[in-house]
Amino acid sequence: MTASSSLPRTYRIKPGKMTAVYIAAGLGLPAALIPLYSEESIPGWVKWLVTWAVLGFVGWIAYAARKLSTTADRQGIRVRGFFRQRRIAWADVQDIRAVPNPSAAMGQGQPQVISYAYGRDGRRVQLYYLDDHHVHVEREIEALRAAWQRLRGEDWTEDAAAARRIDRRSAREINLLRAMSWSMFSVLAFTVLFVVLLLTDNVFLGPEWILIGPVLVFLAVWLGGSLFGAGDDGR
Image (cartoon, rainbow, N blue to C red; front, side, top):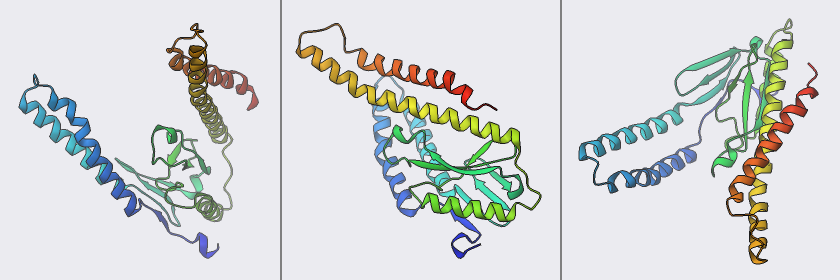
């Protein structure tokens, strides 16, 4: 094993990212409480109770973000999550992959690529902070896979059932991302079409189709991929 792939390796949130978390919390908290305090019919004690509850939740999120981590050592991979720690021994790892982040389009600041380790049952554990916002993902995945292949034992064999479950999950996620991409693109297409029809006095397509159309596109692409792509696996 080369020096670049030496163990242990630990992944945590960068200090600069924590600053962004604090700023987002500081800006978002007042905005979330404005509707509450603008409603005069709500008793004052309820407003204070909700305020402290929200403050506590935001504080817990910030604290948990600092504690989340992924560590790879000679025994395996340990992931410290929001509520518990999970450890997967190298012999039980079935795969380590970087995948597109399905929630990347939900808001700015989301990583485009995240990583998972897959256990013997085919279930996966997200490797926190092994993403394209914190590390060079391809290099780190290569290092972890090298450590896995070295330390999993000479008698390690792939679990066929787990491999099938991993491939099926991956196919479903690819299909979902494809449907989301087509749906997002169709928002622009339906908007342009509506404006063109409006300017030419053709009103058979109402503005509601700017919302309805992308939903139909999503369902068509997603269902089509699910039905016609199901037979591609062959296992």
